[in-house]
Length: 456
Image (cartoon, rainbow, N blue to C red; front, side):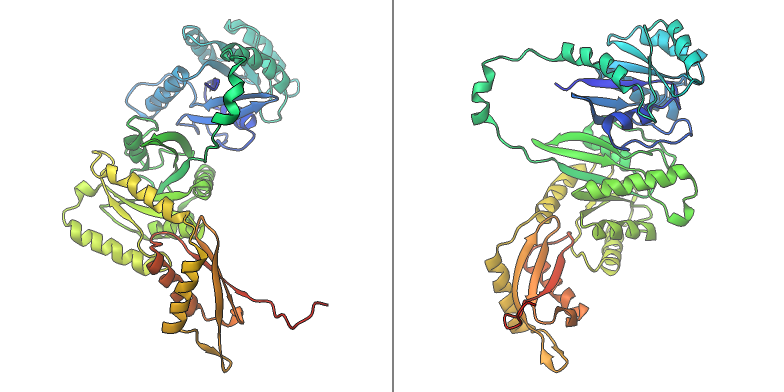
């Protein structure tokens, strides 16, 4: 089992900065505003030859239960229970605060080892705070600068003994059969849940997982980071991304919301299938269609999940209105699956993952060249290409060059002269003939090389 390390500390001491430094990527949002991190985030970390997992958490604060901050602390407590060791991070430049002392006393009572790390020790300004940290009674503090990468060697010396002690003994004869039993694993199905603020994205994720993995609330903008969760559905590995709500660019003013929106767009790029959650009480607004169009442009399979379906009175009319809106606004992707549900009650949730799995299979499909060219022959017989400059345009051959999404190359004469309307006709015919509903199709017209023209 992989060693897990949780980073704890009061708000704005640099926990997410250290998390990003250990993971080697800017996975967690970093901003001077206290309380940016809300949900716990798990990342794959490395330090020298050490490989382990690290958990970023919300800032430790004394807060009453039943409010947003209370839910954040529940997430932090869950991270502690899931970890093998903990770092208590303090701000050396600010010195030891009463809040640091309070939580140092609390952390002495937990069962996993706790180590003290003093951040922001670059230069001389952090030296007094580093020496003051001895008074917390958690042993010798390790001085680092997460932002500048200083002190990582000292951090290595702290982590290495923990990982060595946690490793299970290996049977020296166990390697003999490894070559025969090893099966290369494919990556998990990656699914992103996106939508406008407060449509129920986080509630949907919690309902799928059967636990309160991410914080939910009635107010918009609860989720800030794009949180990835490893999950297993019917024996298949799935990585689910819960993302921040996307508003119109003209309405986004704060820097933090801009960072959250950029994080959501990165999650879409990493995903195979994107579930666009709509609020059934207002159905598809302009921003919903803008998000859907962006998903299609990125080449991802798209599922429409209509949430709060239990609040709809005339469901047939609402569904017809949504279908008509999608056909008019997204003509390039026909047959997008629509799943109606209630994330809060769980009604209809069981239909979502089968739809996701089916969309994923279509998205990665590879079609044989033979059936494709027989389809092309039928196209040429029933609807040949138009004339251009007095001569008939010709299509010679088609092949699929890649999947994810399905991408085809058609070799033709004078590809630049083919009208866009005929290209759309080919795409729609491909979709209808081979059942490529709900996924983008890319069709590239290529010109063949003239064998009678000699290279210079």
